[in-house]
Length: 465
Ligand code: SF4
View 1 (tube, rainbow, N blue to C red):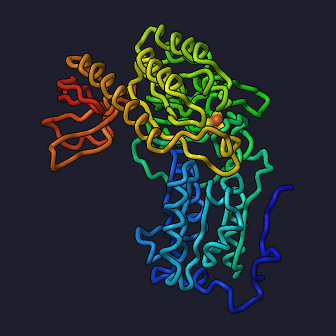
View 2 (tube, protein in one colour):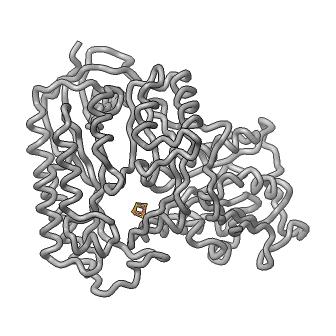
View 3 (spheres, helix red, strand yellow):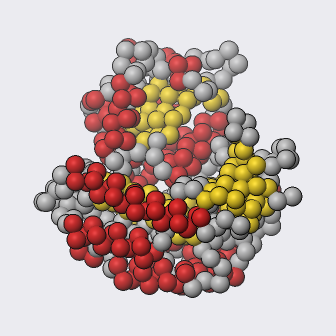
């Protein structure tokens, strides 16, 4: 058993009247308790928040936009970088003198990483729960509703995933389905195995049922989520692999686009490219984080593949019958990264010609094996390398996006900018396209857009009627 602590020895008991929570039982004018939930970090967190909201709505709470009006204030946190963690503690600090009967809760990665330390740093916090324990949220909320002062869910020892009866969908265009939670890799810089626990896949029939429900509700685009989404292994007797699930979700009646993120290069195989080639509903975009172009650094990061093996997978993708967009994550300034190692990353950008990258400077995190590695790269040097990396990638994007002028893309429209007189949407290759149209009310529609200009970060075009 892992940790599931309610009223532990260092915290107050529910019978301590001076520390009970009056606000949670106070009723708002509409007769419902209210909650405010702010999310930090990745898409997995954003979708977890949709599910947490679903749990709360199912218990009779109503969502409010302003934390000052909420009985329950929750922060779903990220600890991937020092800055993200600092931001959460700054938010918690805001409540130091004004929490006044509100329930303040910390969810997600920082909750798992810091555990009960959060109560020490911010004694006005009442709930600390990591994502691997979200299935216990109803139980924890019941403890709080009964007057419990401090409750924690910090269990990592589980093979269950977080299933909810109701999920509040915040994105009206694209719906997310988590198919795998946690991670069994042990990249030396990464907190995820510690904060999200071991890998757990959802049964394929549950995933397909959710996809069908979403299609019935009018969604046409689904994104399958997982920290290592392509490591999926169906725990049911079907024993599907990731590619089987991918094909099956794409075959759900009403679904026109299926995306997936994030793929681990180690588990990325040729069959995924074949599936994309053969299945129009599978989007022509692969996000394949490389992190570094240097074998020496990849080894130190424990990424389990070499530059050559990674480039082999890129070749498979490039050899597909339809062009597939490739994006990546890159870390610069990992301990011991030399100028030559960094140059290897720059030459990798040239070789792959990514459509875009998400770039970061390395920051040491607690509970990671890289934290105490020698030969730290000075901050100034990290920033210099990050700027050089981004400039190289910018040049690649300008050149490649200019080549798209004259091409036509099918765009799923997701926003309108009245001031600019423009619509925005994504192509199946996940390219951001701004365009003009003489039509009105395009939101949620699939339209044809001809590219008229290519910029470094997005492309512009006009609606082809
Ligand atoms: S694969 Fe590595 S970087 Fe990705 S979540 Fe797992 S440990 Fe972290």
